[in-house]
Length: 398
Image (cartoon, rainbow, N blue to C red; front, side, top):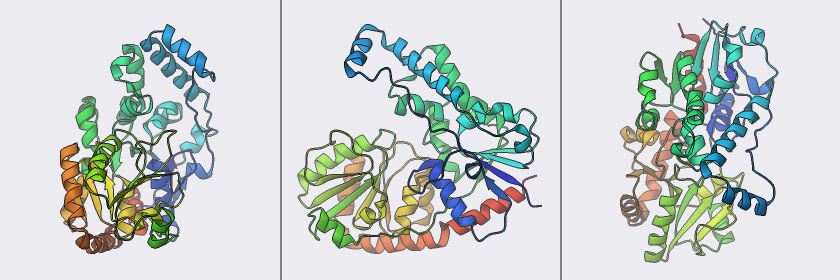
């Protein structure tokens, strides 16, 4: 039976944004030539993009406030204002509109929580795909706000924790790329296993559209004065601990000191200060063409401390380049393929450096390994089969 499905994500889909933005972009690409009854909320209505609360515009005043007021009070105040921002976001969708769909597929726990009023009388299936490398409430507190859960009052933390609790309790099925993706949820949030013990899990590997580089590898290297004989590493994404960026910085210091032919491309938003003062550590800033930098590199490194299912892995496979992955979460899914172009390290500095050196020492073999990765992409990770699998899953829901 063909099910009428609503992809509940009220934000514009973007290929280069990561998370649900890019995941759903590729799903929509894969659906283009297929028969289905799937609607995207982002085609109908969009919420206003949330901006994070700031105490005041004056940096001097902020310093005075921070000096005079207790840190926990400031953290609680920040959290309360974050909740106020959520309350002010309006979504021009009615329960009557929602109720016409057989299936609602959410992609952020905060959406299930803040639009719960729409679900009060909903009789269909509620699906949820999380995209954060660890539970949403922990990523918000630890990675966005950069504080500990103990830096908030128990009342405020409980309220933030309730976002994930409600989402996982309300859903019927958790849809993930692979079973390994929820590893950090079980490790970091002890409530997860209990909340989901009677829930259904369904695993559908993600697929993406074929990636291409708009600039040749030779031109990219020439632009940054990198010799053709150099060994170039590439990192794309957020410069956060959960993404292992601090591990990369420490490893790069060792590698750059040991090997004068090593270079690092760091692709993503540029901070006011570079993480390292070295001409062979190249922070490019934001680009709509990370593919060209990946293609110009010898090895792409993804040293995540926690991993859901990283789209940058699939992008690298598509471009036919070798990968060095942390042995965490969704990264483990690729192990059974036994690709000679995928290497692993434990999420610690010693293992990371050792595997980097291992890859440098077999540079000639890496190219062939990259070609095997491209074959892997073509066979298993294209967006069309991904979309077809999603359609079949929706239509077969009981």
